[in-house]
Image (cartoon, rainbow, N blue to C red; front, side, top):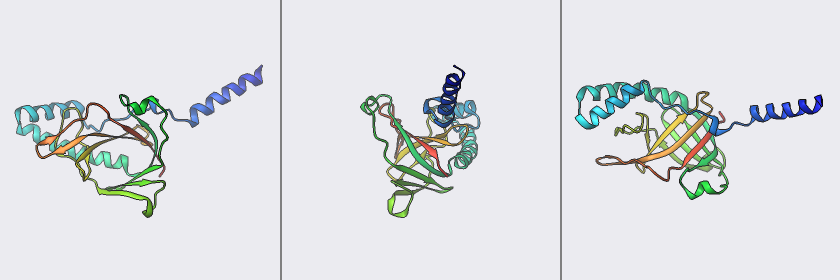
Length: 187
């Protein structure tokens, strides 16, 4: 009986320690001060308050620098999720995708990280169109898509999803069909 209990205990501990459940991770928003940021964005969007714009400009420098220090590295795709898509209703094979993020460039790879497998390389550019639904650290790609990146507290997992598009008059916000990709840091 003792041996059986010990085996069950060891199986439980090993499965808990060596398999990370994405659902249990808490991804951090990229705010220095969430209340100040949200109030400043709302005051600027609605009232065009210049003091709010100054606060936003100060906070975005800090928040963007903090995000860059969290996301620099090489990441491997481990899960794709869409809560309101048909993709979430069935098992989906996870493609071999990698992201290499430096201080100024984000590169997307297929199969492994090598020059021949590079699919897209872009300079990191942050949107200047803000929304009270998002923080100040959304990245814009060349096709004008806006992406939100968040890490967990350990900075070993990255959550990435498209939050909208930049337009000449502002930004759009996706409210449905949002595909979230989860990555694990490998370097």
